[in-house]
Length: 115
Image (cartoon, rainbow, N blue to C red; front, side, top):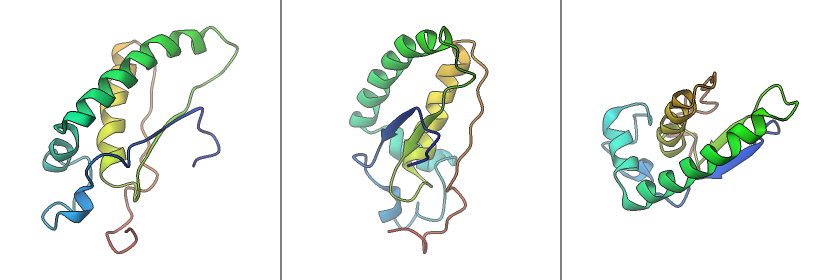
């Protein structure tokens, strides 16, 4: 867990592309991996719920004397599921007209580094 995280979403409940030999070498930035993760009905519902929560929370955090808000998304290896979900969430934050940066901390890990 990143110590700087204000909000943390764990997406290990979603199907893991790591176990698909054809997807394992790719990251959640690749369309085939992103589709594998995001087209799952649980991912669709999860994103709807989290987006609703963020639409409620972010304006309220913005009124506090806080310089930034760090939203972390985690999975087992940090290459597939969390990457795909984080990419979806940053679109929402930018659509809400907040400046946002996206950093994938563990995307460079290889499949040998993860389980």
